[in-house]
Structure formats: structure tokens, C-alpha cells
Image (cartoon, rainbow, N blue to C red; front, side, top):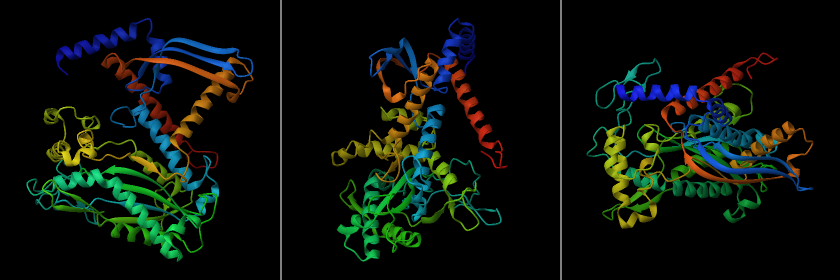
Length: 456
């Protein structure tokens, strides 16, 4: 900050703390968890008794609502809530709950990671078993935070066009992988592909994570069910070992061909690194046990955290690019800047119009959702948020002293957006402080020992 900016910030902070409405504002911000970019709404909300039509509670005026952004770099508070919801969504599909029977935990389950192929040598940081750093291809021994790690060794020969096109089509590549996986499993059972759904169902949840080279890879929890989903047992011929082998076979055998700008065909496929490991039901807190198996709760937390990340390089790239000239001002590596510029350039060509690459240039061409799942895997984000709204409505009714249950009332909201975000940096600073205190309180609760001696 400049001296003038610092002075203005201190003035805004002092004015906010001394204002007569500070405590009301602070209660509103605390109620939404310290959201960094709240939505200011004006209007009204009324709770009616469905049977009598009586108004049980009403509120008029202005309120704050959380922005709901899943990216930690944009809003830590809302990303925490999203990560919590993602955790429950992922874990219920592994261990049961949220409408999924506990017996689903006994079905064959694996944790698979599919990576991107190489589009040219990049700076790497590898460590030996003894903890020694292996020299990179450039001759240097990179430290952990070296911004060169993941960047092209030779930008002039790195295939940026191929990298962006792979990124733009990776969702379709996953779809082909899932189809190939079902075909492979059908072959294991000795049945026709069209009959697979009558014998078994493939359920999964996957999260996209950016590698330092700017390309996504997928972490996926894959589960085998019977024909009616988690409520039915899969055929005896399908095991976790068989699922492991089928995933590796499907990853190796699937590809997608697209055209480069000059018309030369480009085959898109998964990288050679495919990791598949079994999931075990245990209350151990480590991600892996001594046998290399992955635990339910730790894996759910591990996967959920990736759902709150962007490209992983800077906050700036979490926002759409409106003008390519702005890219030179972003605090990103030259490698990532080159990926953005390539996506923008390809997005201006007619043959790639359907890919909307300029819209997704800030995501380096990746156009998919960060967390997706098959229908039968587990609950949905909508159901989880609905449960939270019902719980809060129950708290409101209890505070009113009425015996009415949430299902017996009708809530009518009539709100309009006034503006989005805090009025100044002082408000945002206090909101971020509220969010950090809440996060610290959750950490403290999670590490407190229970009556059985374990952490909660």
C-alpha cells in the first residue's frame, strides 16, 4: 500500500468501528460466516403456518447473503462451507449416510488418479528416498516454492496448443473412459455391454486438480454396485482387484482425436501415470494405513479440499479474462500466461467456437466442473443445502416458541440484489478476520480428545 492508501484504510477502519451500526453489521457478517464478498439484498421474508395462513415471523429491510463462491482464493468462508458439503457428499458415497445405505461400504471401492500426458519437458523437483533433491533437466536443484517448477524447459518447443486442446476435451475423454470401463467390466462378467446395467452399476465421484504445469488430473472414488445402485450388492465376479485392473485397462485403451489449427490430427489420451488404490473402512486418521489402503474419512477430506481450488497459481486466474491485454498484468508465471494466451487465440478461431475457450481462458482451457459424480453415487449438493436450510428454519421456529415443525410452514422470500461485496477494504478485513476465527474454532474442536481418547 502507498502512504495515502494506508491512511485511507486506517480512516475507514476507525470510522467503521466507531459507527453506530457496527455491531448490527458485525452480527450480519458473522451470521454468514465472514463472507468476503457478501450479496446485499433488500426486500422481505415471511413464514406462514400452512394450515391457518397465520404469519409466524416476518422481516423487512436489507440483509446480507453469502456469495457462495467455492474458491478459497476468492472467499475463504464460502469455500470452507463448500468443502464441508463436498466432504459429506464424497464420504456418504464411501461409508453410507445421507440416504446411502451403510452396506455400500462393503462394495468394491478404489481411489483412482488419471493424469494428463506430456506436452514437453518441464522443470521438476524430485526427491530420492533419502531426501536428496535430484537435479532438474535444467541442471538446477529446485526448492519447493520455485515458480519455475512445472514450467516448460523450452517454451519454444512446448506444445501449448496440444495442452489447451487436451484441457478443453478432457471431460469428453472421461466420458469415453467411463464407457470403456463399463465395457471392460461387462467382459469380466461374460455379458454383453447392453446388459451391464441389469447386473451392476458403476458409481463414482471425481474432482479435478491442477498440476503445477497447469493441466488438470482427476481424483476419483469409484464404487461398484448392484443394478439398483448402492442398495444392491454387485455381482460376485466383480472385486476391488478386478476394478483396479479394469480402470488401468480403460485408461490405456481410450483416446480422442481432434484437429490442430493446421488440420493435423491430434490424439488425446491419458498420461502414463495411472494410480489405483483400494479404499478400506476404518476410523484411522491417516490417509493410508500400513497396507497402502486409503481410509474413508481422510480420503473424503483429501478430495474435498481440491474442490475449493482454482488453477493454484494466483487469485487473478480465478476470474474470467475480459481483455487479453490484461493478462500481462496478472501475477502468474510466463508458462501459465502462455497457456492463457493460447486458449484466447484458439478461442478466436471458428473451428473451435463450440469450445468457448475465451470464456475459459482463465482456467487454462479446462471447461468442466471441479466436482462431478454419477447419479447413484451419493446425495447431492442441493439436498445437503436443503437439509441445512431446514435445520436453520427449525432453529428459527424454536426461537419463536412455536411447536410448529419446518414441514408445516411456508417460507415466502422476496429479495432483490442491491450490490455485491463489502463497501471498502476495512469491512473486508474484519470479515476475513471473522472467517479465520471460525476456522480456528473448528480446528480446535476437531483436535479436542473425545471421551474415548481420540480426537473428535
